[in-house]
Length: 81
Image (cartoon, rainbow, N blue to C red):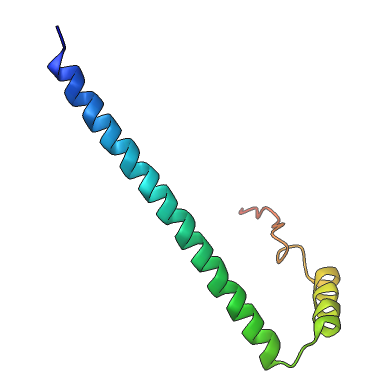
């Protein structure tokens, strides 16, 4: 005595699980592609400005120590009266 309703639900469940796995794999691939494109954009900027490793490192360090808290993602709460 097999419950046909349960068979149907199990089949749909398995189908959904397979589709979810496919979508997760595709999402990981898209994430890799997106990261690669962003990295290439950064490299192009570095090359356009003729920065070598030392110059880029110095620039990043200078920006890191001189940027305001708001640029670092630390925003102050605003109060409205």
